[in-house]
Length: 53
Image 1 (cartoon, rainbow, N blue to C red):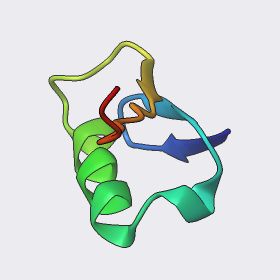
Image 2: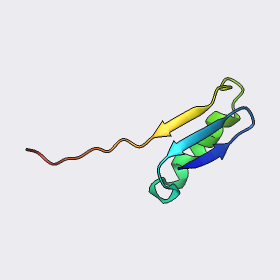
Image 3: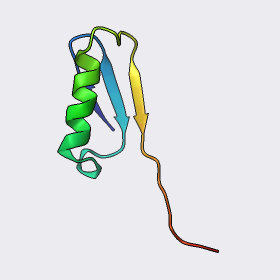
Image 4: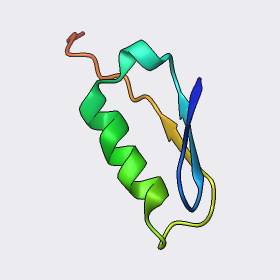
């Protein structure tokens, strides 16, 4: 778990930092810096499997 601090709120990302690429972090940074977002944000990792049963 790690946090991305912004100008208006903070995003808590559920998962290890190395699981997320720089594009993801930049997008979340823009969100937490935007004045429209003032409540805390939580981001969870969705695991998608292509294994068919």
